Length: 563
Ligand code: ADA
Image (cartoon, rainbow, N blue to C red; front, side, top):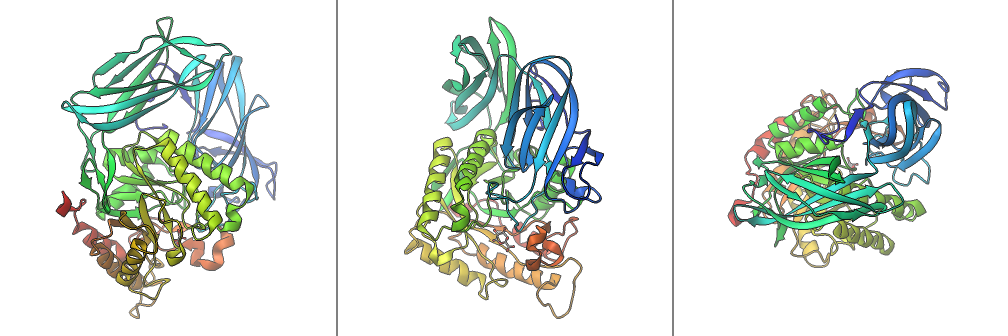
């Protein structure tokens, strides 16, 4: 399963994951040893491979004929794809989907080999030893599709405004023509009982937008966190009157806008009670099964949370689907954490950072739960060169999507020179933990600075990280740092002081659960984990759980005075 709904009724799809593949490490003590492994998965979860960093190969077979498309939802982090021994695609970045199209396969069984590298090298500019684990492997689903010579590549639906008892929306359809010549096609679109069959048009070779129309869909209800109404949009492609391909996606009708220092959804002012979350689990690495994702969200809901920040990379579409269904607001972030200017000057940095933004927005465009795009967490927003990167990336986001807002989480405080660029000003802060200050002093100081010298005045203001560490089970009457008692007291003060600060639209706790960090980072982290989870890596509640539940539970999901 790649999504929580069927994405095709015409195009034939076969899941290639959810079964055993042959796995071989190509370096180190196990080099050349073949073992069967379950996919999707991370090799660090295999006995003996817990710290393997390097090259590996995964092999399977499939049966098909003609033109095929192999879709990879996530391979960590560099991938080369071979069909019957011939390289057909390559892709860098663990957290965004990519595909390989192969034409004219002879009928029969074919070999698929995926070569993967999770090593740290300058050319893998976004991956480096970090405060989360860079796993290796085919970590998300792989699907085989039999496609026609022209197929539907994507649909984008942008809700514009409520109209005539329904919603006005812009619909864009993108097709890919694999041939060398124009092909005449027609499109049929169906959405919540509304149908349209477009006149015939030419699909030119390559990928292109073939339809761009504004329509009014009657009788549809809005998507809101407390009423997450979803609708399927079905596109069929016809050649000579025959349906040859289709694509189904799912949407929700809502707008995101800014009024003064608030972010509004359908005119209601969002009050964020959020959690930062990594895709990480002691048994599954970053390849969490759906049930584990759903369990995380159940705990987040139980604590009164209404939002998740996908720190620090785009998430599995299944997780986004769950958020759409549950009405959990999402800050989706491209892949980057803590980039110095030196790192940002790596010639591969800009290419890959922008590629992730493009892939993330293009492919996750229809998720109503995503209300904000985040970029470059804690990067060099305090240097002139850094500023040029922020400028380019914000420009790219705004070119790709004007229906959401954008931001970046900063820790550069009074040295930041980029606060005029985002729609929302966002700060990471650790009062009572790294900083010997009260939360009230920190939030008030940064707010006042942002309004004036910081040049981010009048914008929505958000705390994107706040929290403290605790080792699960470490309890002591002395209430010293790392005890569960100390963390619970910190959270009590941090949440109370920030949530009482009316100028701040909300906060994201760092973080939902304890996560593994790269061992090259271990000197900074006991247990080689970031221990600021409100639950530990097995989702066991720390003392802070009940504190968060009480404080989040006492606060509504919207700012009421402005509605
Ligand atoms: C930063 C960073 C997080 C995490 C956190 C911490 O703010 O964005 O990824 O490393 O600090 O735990 O110190």
